[in-house]
Length: 367
Image (cartoon, rainbow, N blue to C red):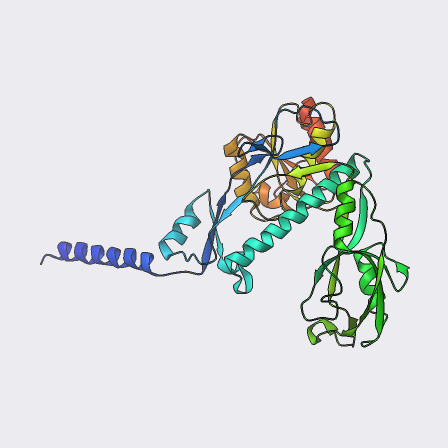
């Protein structure tokens, strides 16, 4: 056999082996790609994303789009060829599987966690928006979770409003733990509560809950993992906050999880509750977590969200301060990044965009 023919055959066989290996060899990576964007001022599946009742609202125009990222499932295993293709592609990112599903987390567990974070982000978005508009929001400390098999099981329930511990009024969730841990394990602690059902009925009726009851619970020693080297009394609950709004704000958006839409929900609420248009009819997208005080926090998958936003038609992208460097390193053509640290920052930037004063916008830099 001529040497040239033999070389060609050998090369072909090597290519076939490499191709088969690429298909068969599984690698511990997952893929992230741009997900859909949704205008918080518009509709999703024929229903308004934001519905406000019991308060005057105003017409809006333009876009305030929240952005998402698609990820491969927990049970999906990429082969080597798919990983290489993903690394080379501009519209996807290949990341270690454990980045998306740490500690062996299942897809079901991840979905549940994302749903809880999404629900909390909606609550914080409402609170932040109303505070930005100086509309009072009533806040109360509640039982967030009751741990199974602890002294509180059957005595306290998720949603119970905690008014006081041992007669001392509580203002923040941290007050509950502080007052409980003043006891030694085995001692009694007395909670003054409004039961969850009464609290829910009062909220629906737009009034403060009436009446309360006292529940005495015997503390126990904290599990070793929680002790931190010293004995500590616990009752087996996690405290959180709940808010009573002066009118109804419903956020309807299915198949979305995580906390990163908080900023855009807040801005959509503000736009609907104030005269004029925040965007001036412009197409603005963005992302960012938000807390009750209006602070904007970083998110994951920023570069994929930029791609999705630009493909949807966005010209401006509200970018959390901590994501700015990464976003600026690979910004799609035609998309202007706007740095935001707070809801107030974002609102001011939208006013500049609406007025056409874009030269003064706070920008992101790669350095």
